[in-house]
Image (cartoon, rainbow, N blue to C red; front, side):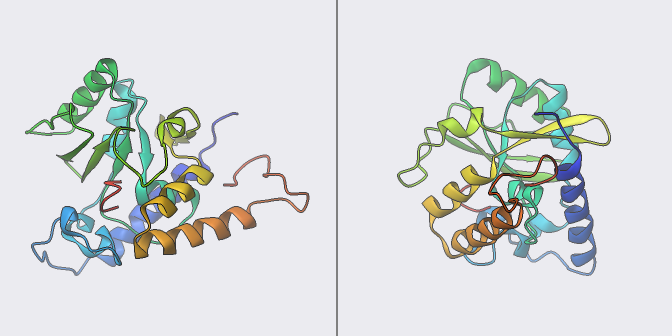
Length: 214
């Protein structure tokens, strides 16, 4: 499947909306890890100045195969709900850990996370979030296949973003089962129905955490 810029452009528009929506908001002292299960991280200080693109580019430049999950993946698929963090799923291998460390360092991470953990928080310039391996429990869902099924989009600046496929993202949301997950899963399911042709086939082009907090 050839890469298109559609999803990347959707995300760029969403980040512009985030910037506009938070323009007059003052910090409240609530980081993304303190997000509630209804409003999500957009209601936290993580949304202030949120810009995942430098880190996404650094991941590409470092050769990382990490997959965007959580609500940033939702935005790539066309969700309208804004967010304040960037969560990634990665395979837990030493090679990928080296690529992640290189990307984190390139984006100003001053305290590298412990990548030996199944879920590790990180903070870089413009974004923070969680780095998750498939060992982390998503209810009864095995998320390992999500890595191989990831979709890609090409940002107009010239880098590729890997993100969870729509059906996988819906499954992940439903497996977590918080109020925001149910709401977002239903929105994603509506998008999936809208992006199907009358014959039930996906269109040829342009169709279509921390899991604890995204």
